[in-house]
Image (tube, rainbow, N blue to C red):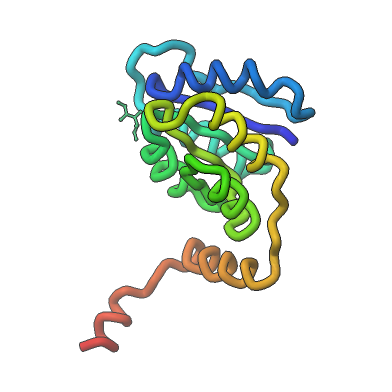
Length: 158
Ligand code: RB5
């Protein structure tokens, strides 16, 4: 699998650790920065990776910041992206099986590198279960395309 990875300063050290540890997965990881612990803005890195995953240039993305949360908020603004912040093994498996997440985000200030490595391994190898979960993703996709008609809803409710 082709995996795009990036971090801000809060996730930089974790990214370095992961790239060192994940050489044996058979996947190719391409690093889109940042390149130091100097302060940078996480949305710039989130959009760099999310755009490449959404376009099909990469199969998956991994984004690391202090909490993983800012990266997920930004990445999920890109059509076609399903980014999940994960800090445990159950969620790593579930967000692939149920949500078909295509971007994994983690916080370098939240999770240690050993657990993060296991999370990535589970997340990379777990397939999407489809079935009822596909129907739910179709609903999300429809809103992503068409938006929610909030004006009509407010009228109905009043
Ligand atoms: C940077 O200090 C921090 O806000 C960022 O790494 C991330 O945690 C944002 O969600």
